[in-house]
Figure (cartoon, rainbow, N blue to C red):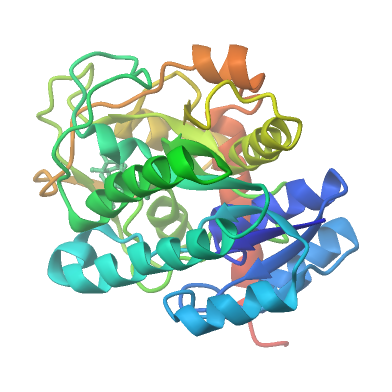
Length: 343
Ligand code: WQD
């Protein structure tokens, strides 16, 4: 039995491959290397001792997906990370996002629905809630009109899976992530943002290491304790473990419905300034930042209600914001060393 991990060389995908191999699963990593690199496979091997099977596949190419499932006829489960995920880019180039994110999903499901039974874990996002009315956010919080084509592909993706699972023997779990940060403690794998990082933590670590001159804090006029926006920052290692737990739930037929939804977060909100202060503490250095105007499309506050994942899924976060920031910093320093030409 093999587990297919699409987007397996990406940030969350690579950490999930490590968690799966640690639990003894045989995995196939699929990636088109558009936002990752083959070295990630070596990093995974250095951690687990096993290099995952790897296929460089364009999932938006239907025949490529059909060939993949012909080659590996013992795929029992799929964890689907592969997607374009830059919110701003999706606004500029919506069709790239609808084509890539939705066609890849449809072609995977077309293969899975031909199997006697299949298990599907979908990488979704708290972005489907937009600015939720109530904090912490529960799984039955209303889905708001998407603020970006990226967010819309997550909402539409969830609906496609629900419709297919109603009539085909596919059991699915939709995992709605809050804000994944950090890196594996070994610093063998981590976040590899292409170009200028959009997300807060990689921008912080790149500023601290001197790759960026200063961090712009997008707004301090939000109705929060210190005026900066609040998010639920979850360690990527905790997040990866949740995928293994969710897969085992399906494999052991413990799911109560053919599609289950879980919010994955720490349950704690942290403001941008609190993240900066925590980073300065763990890195023991001052961060150069400047308060600027709000970023278009940002929400004020989001943090997860964790009871359903804690009780039903039987999973909860074990690592702290400081653990995540410390591992992110260790990873950034490792990247710097690896880029330095040998002296
Ligand atoms: C966090 C906070 C920014 C950068 C996005 C996607 C979401 C998911 C996670 C994929 C916000 C502030 C950021 C900076 C800043 N991605 N910030 N200066 O926007 O909550 O979520 O990433 O699934 O779908 O929307 O994460 O890290 O971009 O921002 O002040 O240079 O940090 O305003 O308050 P976000 P983020």
